[in-house]
Image 1: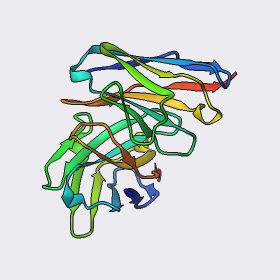
Image 2: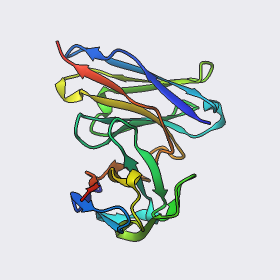
Image 3: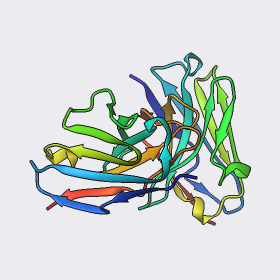
Length: 119
Length: 107
């Protein structure tokens, strides 16, 4: 059974960098698939942030591209998100997920973690 | 950029009734790259349908997807109590985005 678990600070100050890790169990990242992040502001809809392949190839939402960095650590079976220069508008539940394509659908999701941007 | 519109915003139905949810794209969705998700409060979205009409693993056959081009439909043939939730469509391929969602609540 594929499982994903997000981890990271629940509170980030404005202008700082949000950092999250996603640990995958039950499947090796090196075996394939794309690994993505999606966020959902409280009470609102879903927004794709970006995805990464095992090789390190990255695909990011153009609206966030300049602030997003994704990376993968196959030795730890983890992938990571960094979002710089955050504002209150970046407050959201952040999900990590697995999908078959770089900008594809997602078949397995983590439970999500709420990140609040506030001083 | 493809923009997805979902209708209705809220659908109020009773258990046992049929639910028909619409997702309309501002441009044609290539190769029917359209997915549907179900989300319950406090939970992550759950993939129901991909490729417009293929059911994901473990999804009951009361859920079905159809459509092509710019018009897509998710149908729940007979609503079970656990089906009351928010449903999102997503287009994918060369770009991706999600629709605003349709809430199916108990009448």
